[in-house]
Amino acid sequence: MAAKQKIKNDLKLISDEASKVIDDLSHLGKVLAEAGGDQTKEAKEKLDYFLEEQISSLKKRMEVINTKVSQSAKMADKHVRANPYLYILGSLGLGFLLGKVIAPRYHE
Image (cartoon, rainbow, N blue to C red; front, top):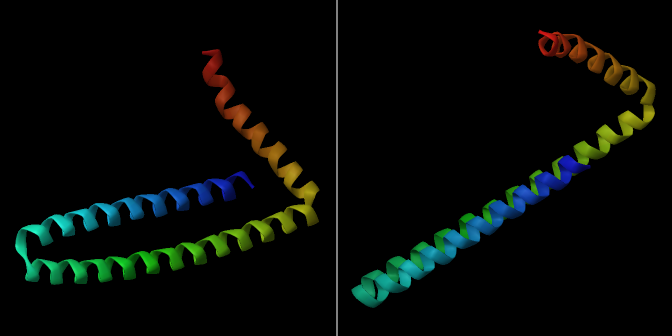
């Protein structure tokens, strides 16, 4: 479940950063509109429309990713709950092997 929370946090950070970029570009558009008149205003409107579409698309993709991550986490949880001894033995075996590999380095 920690991985799911980390992914949610990462998606939130991406969304926040995208919003900051939009705000910065909007500010840039306003500055250009003040300096350049009608053509700059039209360019700003096109840029705002394009950015809104891109952010909307990004949010939709993030929702799809979030849904897929949730589904994968649920499936993994079901599998672990259905086969707990398999995962316990696998973890013990992996720990044993890592102990054999790492331990000799500390004794040298």
